[in-house]
Image (tube, rainbow, N blue to C red; front, side):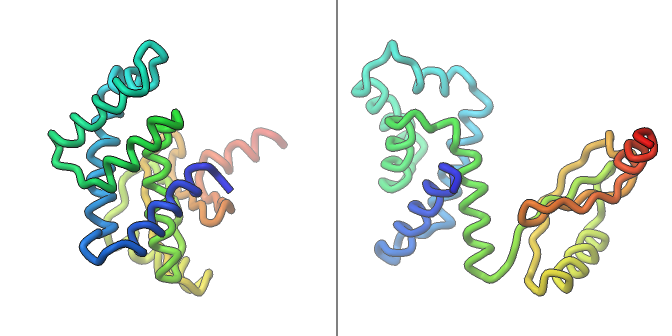
Length: 176
């Protein structure tokens, strides 16, 4: 099991076992906000990973940032744990795993759809419906646009990729 999945599972379990006022949705929203701040400011992440600062200094900085952002105690503690373990860089993948766990708890699957151009809602809905029938589970598709696929789509669900792109067909043709 991936480290990100383990942290995500612990976060979900804590949120669901704690008092009713702790809402997993609000916790993940706070963590997404913090994650976006780290992604947009690489210096902040390097600061929290720096061996030049003591754990106490890092903890104080984290507490200060979380307090200014109005983060909950649980979010602050979770971020402090990631910082202490040197895993703040995993926050985006942990949040993706939290989303995956939530979908799985509802009996569904998450897939990634890659296309050359953005697809409209009707096309995405139709693709998700076909895949849901195939897997006999609700499918939530995360989309990504990659002009390199030229045309067609590539869908990955549960580690299995279904590639209907022109790029892959041309690659097969070239290898003949």
